[in-house]
Amino acid sequence: MRSLRQLLFPVLLLAGCTANGAAGGNDGAAAAPAGGRPFVAEPVAQFEEPWAMTFIPGSGEALVSEKGGRLLLWSGERGAIQVAGTPEVAYGGQGGLGDVVLHPDFAANRIVYLSYAEAGEGGRGAAVGRGRLTRGDGTARIEGFEVIWRQVPKMGGRGHYGHRLAFSPDGRYLFVSSGERQEFDPAQDMASNAGKILRLNPDGTVPPDNPFAAQGGVAAQVWTLGHRNPLGLAFGPDGRLWEHEMGPSGGDEFNLIERGSNYGYPIVSNGDHYDGRPIPDHDTRPEFNAPEITWTPVISPSSLIFYSGDLFPQWRGSALIGALSGRALVRVEVDANGAREAERWDMRQRIREVELHPDGSVYLLEDQREGSGGRLLRLVPAGQARR
Image (cartoon, rainbow, N blue to C red; front, side, top):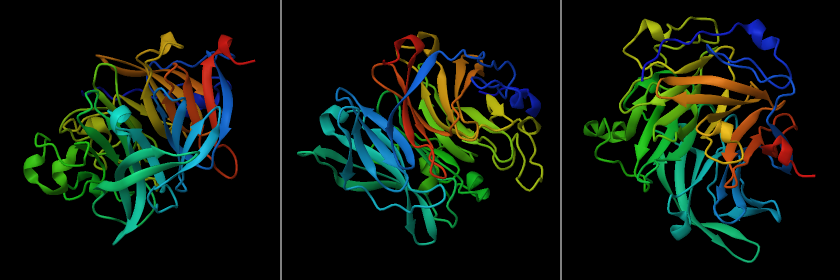
């Protein structure tokens, strides 16, 4: 879906926000009123550079990845144990152990998917693998871990891996976000699967009906192209796929992902290069799919879910986005006409991950920097906080 370029609020408006809410970066965004948080944030655990988490249905447990390479099996009752059998990661910069998701039929097959940065010929790149989670007496292990996808080619540098994972609602396809590794050109190069959103079968093979399947090679994996650093990937309640990505200097994006579309980076962006060189805006090149929302000043979006629980009925169907530089939780309303920021709550820490608990509460992982952060927070309605 194409939309007109969103009007942006000026920097001074953002600077004047209250501690409990911030102004949005697109037309119509609303700030949360002072003292108006609808939730209480309860710290429940602490991790070292956490990156992602997923809850295991019916168990009261969650898998939590730490960028340094540890995968932990955590519960509020028992604490955390390290899961053995995980891959060696290329830790550094933005790289390390990344996303963790469960196979749609996890209850029967116990398969867990991990994304991570790996070293190899030519440098480093993202990879995705899977294995079976087994349990022992106080132990846990990923058995038979196998790599099912790799970024091609490997490159120097340690940034923009992307590597968020999302299964389609019917469980038939695995979508992978792949960053352009701060190299710009791969996002438009069909000989590379960097700077793309990819659609795979659960075993990593390529569905024959992918839009570029006839080209063969890594191009056959591609669902959409022209992306920068996509760190959020989720299906909405109506089955449409959404993505957010970090822009350069300005122009963070929230995109509706449509089969075979080109989102224009680095040819167009609603931000500019860090050295001040301009990049033409999306509205100068209508052949590219334009974002539904852009943020300037940036929020550095890190993670994305759609809320479907019962504890916050006013959020149902909304996207919840973690913000790193924005240090916030952002709620975005989505409908058939597009998307708009509805609320923003200052969390006073960089938010790396947003996850929905089966009971309808929302969990946030803080990003750990310079020895601070790294907490796991549980959000519950203000009147339901634990005493």
